[in-house]
Length: 147
Image (cartoon, rainbow, N blue to C red):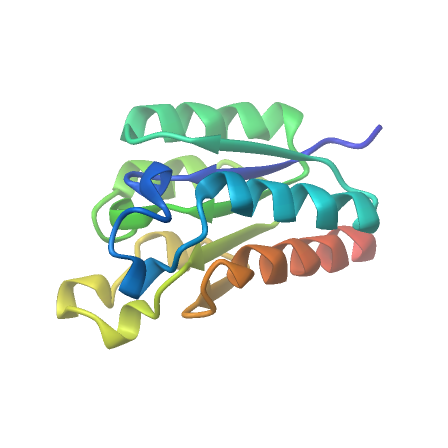
């Protein structure tokens, strides 16, 4: 079996469906994971979905993915705009990295317009709601197929 695609979610994403549904929608993180699991199976992929509100835990999982993962889909949440540590960890990962944001960060507060993660990402998906995760998974499948 091939190495899984790590789907990493940062702070407050455990509150999807409860937190600001006018921005993030009504789907829960469990809904997102189920949709990704279903799509991954049809693409011949497996996923490892993880969520943490702690920056260091996300760094640890990125480092784990260096050995055990084929790609990373990352919604870093607010850490997008603050975490050089996550960027440094991503820079040690050789596989594809896709950054996902449920909302369009460029239509929001000015401090959200810059993402440290984007400089390492092979693609950035923003403003597509939770469908962005499925778009990212399809992109990862294409990148992995190209080798």
